[in-house]
Length: 365
Ligand code: NAD
Image (spheres, rainbow, N blue to C red):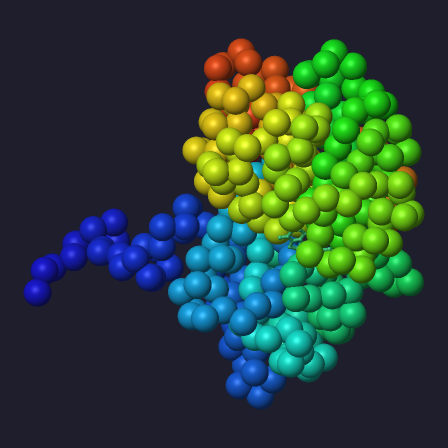
């Protein structure tokens, strides 16, 4: 047997926690289990340099524990960058509950989950995410105060989508300013993929400004409603990539932009709400840049949702949240400038600014 003399020499396995490719210097990873309620959760705290780690709780029927761990680690690191680039006094964290959100949810499970969050003494603050809702956060609130995403009737911010959409709109306008020298979208054409909570609000903003809007969605009913409401033109699920438009806004799922469809794009700008919209951040950030397309990084311009829940910590105020989201305009311009000056992609520039903010806070400490 090989003798291990110090902790650094210890071998880590790919599926373990420290050896996980997505571990990336996480501060703390907490595994939560309760037999009675059936709770199986993982809370990942990536970095608390700038403040407590705020990130939603995803409930998902993961196929394996490794898959759940990988997801929570990736998401949690992403929250560190999103909070830092948005200038919020927050760190990055995220949690996953392993289970079927349609069948396995009970108030008891969320109360137990709240107890685990409470035990972290405010180092992690939760909110809703895919598979969880404001109603679930009300159950979590019974056992911990470290929860946001509560209904407006309880002093919370309610549905964050209008604030998210407003931030995306600001990012899109900043990209327009960079591209055409004016941020007006009047007379421009915008294609929106996914007209759900955020997509609909984005369509409203751009249509109100006088843009010609094209929309697509797998939900045909929703598509018809939005087209009639805002005078948008319906286009096909695949056809959207080939449209001769000024702006393409992915607002459906993550990882939709890949080498094949980026090569089909004819737009000047990509700016949308979907999380992790590039299948590979490095490869596709570069491809967009090589094609001369101005890309407004997703984690910067969709930060309105985080801004909205952050605002709850100080006593929720929708106006203040929208004002904070408006700053996305200036940050997007800053990123385009840095990308030009340093000859890097906008994704790299956004990551660099986020890392600089964390590093300078560390050195002040
Ligand atoms: P949503 O579920 O309300 O809307 C998504 C829409 O996309 C739905 O109408 C769905 O039918 C459609 N869709 C799914 N697959 C599609 C496909 N292949 N082609 C076209 N349409 C498709 O979700 P949302 O809250 O509007 O969020 C949209 C995106 O923005 C997600 O990626 C989400 O992670 C991200 N986001 C949302 C918020 C927020 O505040 N809601 C904040 C940050 C990021």
